[in-house]
Length: 404
Image (tube, rainbow, N blue to C red; front, side, top):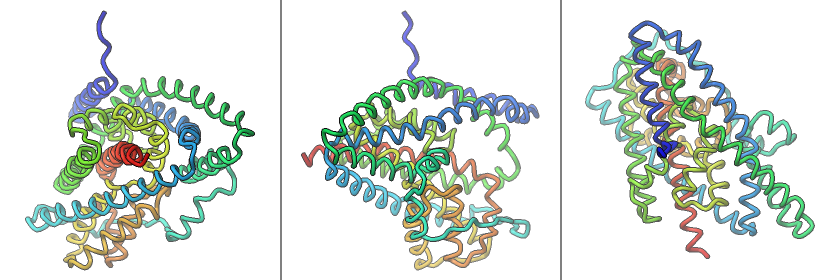
């Protein structure tokens, strides 16, 4: 009997096939074919994932809290998770600035004409406004809008209340456990369709992004991706090695399926079901992974932080502005704090970048120079964010194990 290909291998084959088909369509002038007939199948797959994300986050977090059976452990896991993400985001900013300044100093960044650049920054009400908005006024609206921070807050309140109710809440415990078992089966079926989504999205991206603007910004993209790779290898795999004793090869092999899917889908939330399987394979406890991964998908933005730093130095160069050490420190602090301050906001990456540019006095309209290739940046930064979520769940599992 032939051995069935593992999901990571199926996804890798789909990725390569998608690149090949995309290149053929691009050079053959059939880019519209991928947009009209291939991408819709990827959209269907992503729609299925988005459809299951809210019940997965809600039920998995409540189930995880009930499994911990102690709100003190929930608090301990939460503090360790947020501390891990804040530290790695600050390091990501430094890595992004180092690579950006190396490229800029060597004259490798292209100088583009900003006369035609247009970008209208979305309004950001500030950290306190965001803090207020994460507490829902209507539970069902939070579900229908897929507001992940509000869903997490609802999960925390419901999970904590079920624990506090004790024996009287036994029926609620059983309902959550039973419903989560059903959702896990549905999740397994949807994940099995991942190679289709990866193939169709990759073919579409390669076929439609091979434009002149991509070529002119190639070195900026290379700079960002070098930052992504170094951060993943040095920070994530090294933290897994130091704190968990896991080899980098084992870590990346275990996280591979989620990384590739995040790369093609550009959605941390949509990748949650795959991330959960990868984290479990790497030894993360189910209750901890159920808490860390949904939280990480909303507040962990290391990839976005690197992108911001590279984009800021590049756009400053286009505006003929030389950034001082003090201004670079402002970039690090603003980007690190904004990673939580803009969590759950649509287009968070661009909002964060607009905030950084405004803090440095660089015209926000300059973002228009890189909007055309933002998806290329987004693929890498989402992949990095998801890798960080998995690394955090593995590390927190180890730390909590020592606490017992």
